[in-house]
Every structure is written in structure tokens, then in C-alpha cells.
Length: 117
Image (cartoon, rainbow, N blue to C red; front, side, top):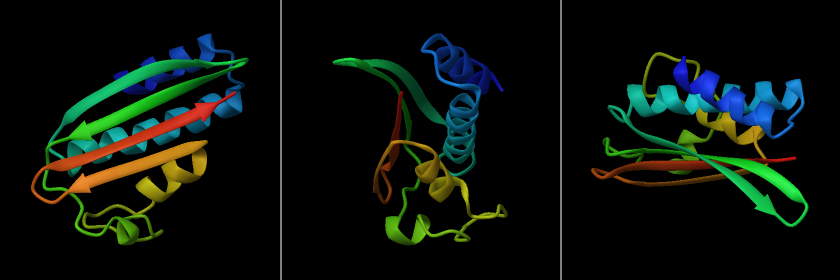
């Protein structure tokens, strides 16, 4: 809940439309849930980007959980190792301008998402 409110406040301050705010908050919520449910918790960071005339919001989710053995499989709609619908990673990827994921088995996972105005 706190991450949703914090992300929405940042997106609003940057002037993102309500639709874009909702996309960013939805992606953040899914990834935060993954960080807790599958990574055992972790660190979430928020960065405001200024690149020339465009502005953006970058969110990083990092855990030290078991890691993802097959990232391509984890990005397929419907794939899950839990009880969810298996749309968290793939959905977050579709909602954002940029999506990067890295993971090492036994060391953890890092997902970085960016939305540009």
C-alpha cells in the first residue's frame, strides 16, 4: 500500500496522466508483491529522470531470494510458481516504457522499470 501511494505521488508530481499513473502504480504493485512473495522482501528505489526535454520515473526492485532459473519462461503470461495468475512480470513489462530483469539462482533478482513522459 505504501509503495502504491509513494509511486503515485511521484508520478503525479512529474505530470503523468491519470492513465499513466495507474499503469505505473499497477506495475509497481505487481513487482513489489513479487519481491515480497518470491524474494522474501527486498529494496525498492524510486528515481526521477531528466533526459533532455523528457522526464521519467525509474523504479528498481531488488531481492536476495532464490532467483529465477529461466527468465524467458517467467516472462510468459500464465507462468507462475505460486498461486497467482502468472501475469505480474509480463504485465509490468507491457505497462512500462523500459523493462530490465536480471537474476541469479541463489543470489536474487533485480527488476528495473522506467516510464517516460
